[in-house]
Length: 213
Image (cartoon, rainbow, N blue to C red; front, side, top):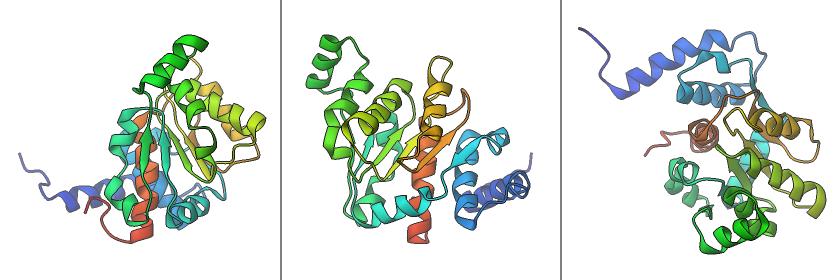
């Protein structure tokens, strides 16, 4: 069987396959790059019409990254997937507290999920940062509560939790709020690889070279 073996050729061909699904969405060049990476990560062109990017989200994320912002995640899979070496070039770090003892204790005491407790523990650190949620709807609900009740202001929220309980509702709430630019996906689809792809795509575009270098 003959098949493409070179990584860059595989990637280029993937983007060629994705492109027709984006042509009628009236996207900017920057949005096309982010959409393409998200769809590529999912392996699912049905994502094309359900990805939602706030008009200021990409610019806000680029400005925050260039300013050395940190990224705060709900789960280790998101933290692991974000290109930390690339982010470090701008002075930022990636944090996840879901396994911390203080977070476990808070979750037990308050009767909430650990990802929710982790976001609560981050607190004011979220100001000016990028929040990346790829798994837990409760984490996204908690960040939105902090925005509404505690005047916490992340630069951007990449909120793409996946699943059948709370995911669609949390993402709907994210898209309906007017305070913070966001990147999300409607409905039950999503997941850590999709959130990671959105952030890495933005850093890829900032550097103008292969994000995996």
